[in-house]
Image 1 (cartoon, rainbow, N blue to C red):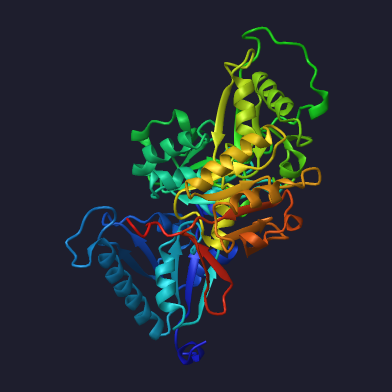
Image 2 (cartoon, rainbow, N blue to C red):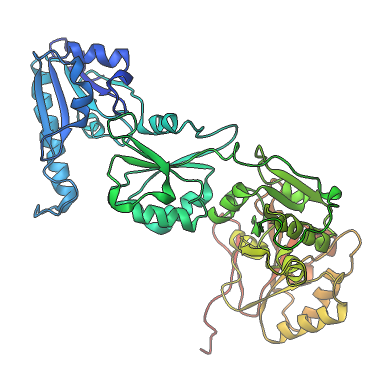
Length: 519
């Protein structure tokens, strides 16, 4: 508290939330302060009308001084030398000094704010300029979000769901990403942004869920499905609501082992969708917004149990876990669920198109009876890129990706590809290098590559990148020990140009220049 705040002669500043529109939703504390205030201040556009004052009018005494803080601009252009932002900054400074004069004179000043004062409210600009100078109290109010949910009679969030509040003024791509990534959402500030918001809802797959609320608790209130709203009729005082998914998800389903229903005649059931989702190499920090949205939107999750365990449990979703060696069966199971109208997410680690589930699903989807089932593949951070980021930039030039697993292809094919990549002087990213049942591949690959690479060539061993037991280190190719490599390890082997440098006290960094010396 500053010296002025301790001075009993100065007045007190109150930022008072008056709620979404209905005067009866003003809190008792807010009503008391409004009635006792010496000065009532409120923001308004150049037409002079204030929604906040209209809400609070029944609590005014007629004896208060009213300070109408009229914006010089709202959405139109301005010839202010600082542009739109400069015009508003000057206005906020001038308005705060008008209020400061009352406070210096010992008057109590109440600044009215629709909804809550610190939630997208004009009051906050006064607060930032005055709260450190004078005794201040903020009185919370019912937000338009709470009012909209109440008028819809629909839960916003349940259990572990996440609510995202988004201004409709964001670019369409950003709106789409945010909507795709969250469980529930409220988009504020519609009006002229409504067409963009509607497109973002459609692109993110959320349009069917979205609800529209206009002037909640006010005269002229309107609610409905957002997809049915005419854009030309949408005012600023409206919001888009994507409510809780928990109640919307059908909780019926069968475990992976139990699917045995008879074939369905054509047209008997609506077709659903299969989305093959790449979850990255580890936890939620590696998920793209699109992948996060697909996982949240699914009625069923299908995948290797270890990978399913990385996805948060959501009420209403059915999880079908299985062993890692039944990719084809898993793919057909997911397609059969979708054929029966389910929204299925097939969970794949890394990128689903890189030694993962996308191929198995598409192979099955190209056969009867699944040709008409919609299939999408959503990319994820693949292990090679995650490992490279930890080491530095070893994949900075041309590189090849090869799996050392000979379970699905003979070692002769692997050796031929290793030799071709080595002769081409490509950096190598080696997936599936070893396991309990495959112990010779790493040593064989090392010996083959030593025919083409210097023994000092850097090899990055990256294990469990992004996970709790992550370990990334670099060794010389000649020192690569197969005993240090398991199924959770990825190898990055440098080209003749790859650099391995010690930077001060930091760990080693490995990088491959983008230019060859002779270029």
